[in-house]
Image (cartoon, rainbow, N blue to C red):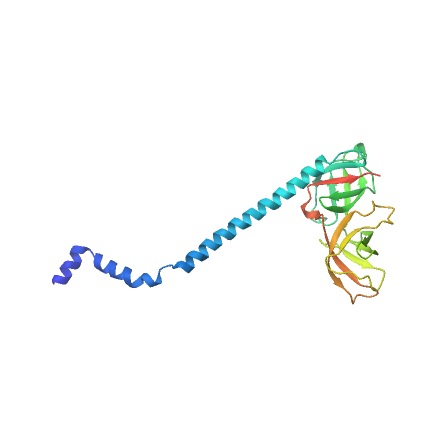
Amino acid sequence: MSILLLVRLSKGAGFADAYSLLSRPFWPGSAQREWLDAAVDLEQLAKLKLLEDDNRRLRGLVGLQNNGEGDGQVSAAVISRTTRGWWQQMELGKGALQGLSAGDAVLGPGGLVGRIQSVTPATSRVKLLTAPGNEIGVWLPRTRNHGLLVGLGTSRPQLRFIEKDPQVRPGDIVSTSPASTMLPANVPVGVVQSVNERAVPAPHAVVQLIAAPEAIDWVQVRTR
């Protein structure tokens, strides 16, 4: 009876203290705290990386807008994209009134993205390098081997070679051909991602464009 009386008077405080002592080994320890701290650090790093990428993108856009108009160069905003034609075309907010014409080269931050297909007085339609069946002559400056960049309707076009041993390897830079009469020579296009050396009749490679069409807000048009 005395024990029950003590428990009633203490309102179970003793049992709470005992439970606290017994369960202490199962409390969140330093390892869990370290995991939480690491997670917070990782989140902060991810946010910093996103801010840096966004800052770099905005700097590129400002550079495109301020990069001396005239001298055969016109900056234009991308005003329209269609879901079905995401890898095929884009619409620009400048046209014939600003001196643009079919065949002009269109560059995004880092390199070539396509050519103007048609114009109206105030707009232009760009055929992207990634458009199905689109073909341009390119070369590898490292090996001086030429090839044909072919759009497949996906984010990465295919580079087809003429030679059976083009000596290509992942990481090679791809640029417009110095022999091209349709495009400015030696404009950066992309980077070789992978090579299929068993392809017939000659090897081909997958190319990652330097100027990713899906992330472009402004372009620079080189008028002829």
